[in-house]
Length: 222
Image 1 (cartoon, rainbow, N blue to C red):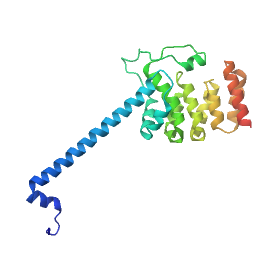
Image 2 (image 1 turned 30 degrees about the horizontal axis):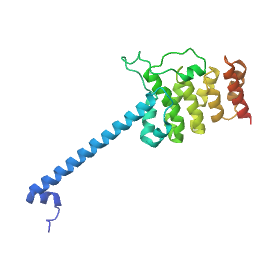
Image 3 (image 1 turned 90 degrees about the horizontal axis):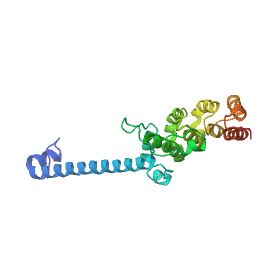
Image 4 (image 1 turned 60 degrees about the vertical axis):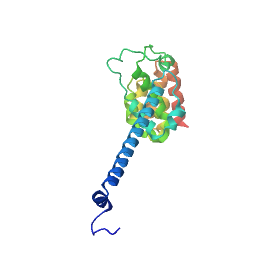
């Protein structure tokens, strides 16, 4: 078909084959809507799956999270800032194994506490791709519920979490759980690091923490 100069196929179809053009446009619109609906449904399903994993009062299923790739990582990082709604604030989800392990005063955890606890430990096992989570993990070092898990994840990230060193030094001085181990994994034997670990190895409030700091000090000295 010879077209006048400057014309395209769609104006010709529209002018001479209106039913066909309308049919094609309808099919395109329906297909796009179906694709959008399918994508949205899949995203909601994935989001619900990750939320269910993180909200469970048990060890998260790391393999299932890893299998979801970058989408799961984004959801896990978002979960680090999870907060309870006013209606959920009084609900308890699980007992804190970390609180028991560190012999802290146990308390009932809310759903948001559990999600943050699980997200804070899962993210460290996602590798260097989880580096965008480092600033949030640094903030969680001051969270009396999630601090230990945040320190564990920072330690697992190693050099990728280098920016966390100043906050970890403070956490060691505050006798936060697993902060000494994380610091030894990330930092070199600087004066500030060595000083914080030496002090914690002598004056930690718990024998377990003093031993952890001593082992961390030995690690950076090797």
